[in-house]
Length: 82
Image (cartoon, rainbow, N blue to C red; front, side, top):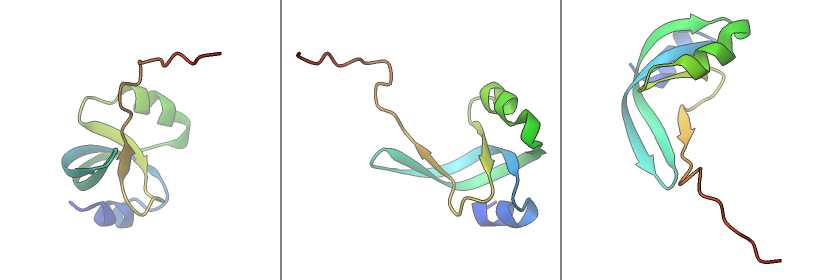
């Protein structure tokens, strides 16, 4: 299912989705195909976000596109000279 279809089925709410296909460019993943699992109530969003299975995310349908911003080496620390 396309993201736009999910937005129409679940207007203005958080949704738990399974990612089926995406395009990667620069440091972003543009999600192109998803399988909606269920709507997520606002008060449970944080819990659902952190407990989502690999390949699944919680995303809000107010967003025109479903995009994940990738962090390269998030645990790498850069030492700055003083």
